[in-house]
Amino acid sequence: MTLLPIFIFVLTLIAGFPIAFVMALTGITHMVSFGYPGIADIVSQKMFYGINTFSYTCIAFFIAAGKLMNAGGVTQRIVDVAQEFIGHKRGGLGYAVILVGMVLAAILGSANAVAVILCSIMIPAMVSSGYDDDFAGSVVASSGILGCIIPPSIDFVIYSVLAGVSVRRMFVAGIFPGIFLGLCFMVVVYITAKKRNYPKYREHFSPKDAFKALIHGIPSLMVPVIIVGGVMGGVFTPTESGAIACAAATILGFAYRKLHIKDLPKIFAESGLVTAGIMLIISAGNILSWTLSYDNIPEKLVNGILGITSNPYLIMLLIILMLFAVGCVMEAFAAELILVPVLAPLAEAVGYDPIHFGLIVIIMLTIALATPPVGMLLFTTSKVSRIDLVRLNKAIWPFVAAGLIGTLILAYTPVITTFLPNLLYGPA
Image 1 (cartoon, rainbow, N blue to C red):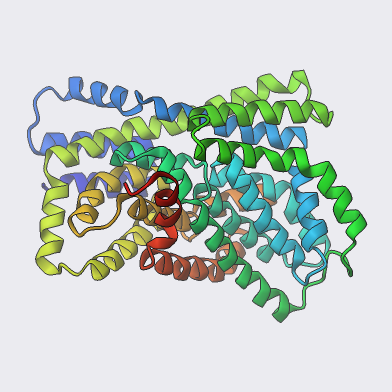
Image 2 (cartoon, rainbow, N blue to C red; image 1 turned 180 degrees about the horizontal axis):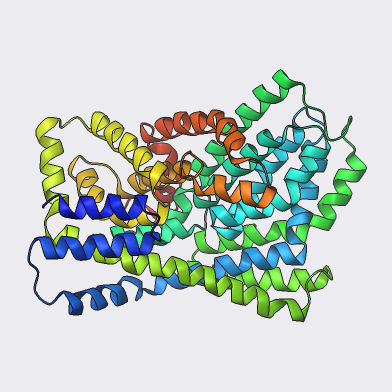
């Protein structure tokens, strides 16, 4: 492999090209560099087959479900329950953001969708209660990370297709790690709230108000239970779970009288545009992934690293550091499309479970979503909440550190990830 593809990749990335074009141009340059004949034919073919996978159909449903929930008032009911049950603790609104992020993650499967919803609802509430706006934004951005880890998850679907593993097993494997990372973020909230003496949402716990909020919120809270439970039990596929999430969000939105027929065309149009952008990234990424495979880059990387060390723990640490570095400067979907075909053979060669390895890959790339300088969650949070990006970049680092520590624990304690899928479905 010549240095020309690397030069084109870096140049187009720095120049601000859309990431789909960055990967497509790099892949085409790579083919030119090793003299592949019939480039035009293979490019169109690989772009088509890159998205010609049934599993990807769930992406559109998850995106639409998030927009329907936000417009229909479903999210607000979930927020109300969290506030009433934990708002009497110091820093209670911070805990509530993370808890709501976990619930939304189990419905939406998208980091940006979770962050946008929390920005519009929770940041104003936290700021008006006396929290620093940059801290409120960092809590929201870190909670968005959970959207890619707690099932269902768009990233899990993409990894499963690329690595040839079960989507259902990936979904189930993400439950405990997602909750564990949420607890890591809560530790940061606890320390910060105590240090800065942040206020309580309310002075005392009110059983009456909590019960009332719970009764009103039960229909909304049942949505993630039905979706995740249905997938775990084999009642329906991930794609069907996305459709059910849309149906439930629509019905509840009409029942709460927050959603109207006239809102649907705009919601579905916006969902279609977001889905199209993701699919373009996937199709373009398949060009680069194929060229790397054709040029035996994965095999060369495996042999190169194994020539340095065969210690699986050291190899995992090197992979984690590489994923973090790549994720800091590259969009997660694109990084996944490029790196999974390259790293999966290496993980298999040193004996890592592909489900466990997939979780580590996705978690690291997702943490990078909230890491400067190119963390998309930071841009999203800053844009929606109008919090200065420079201040937000500084405030996010304690959460990034907590996420990295949590990931290292997960990486070297695989039973946390593999226990539940092995219990439900047997060893892979």
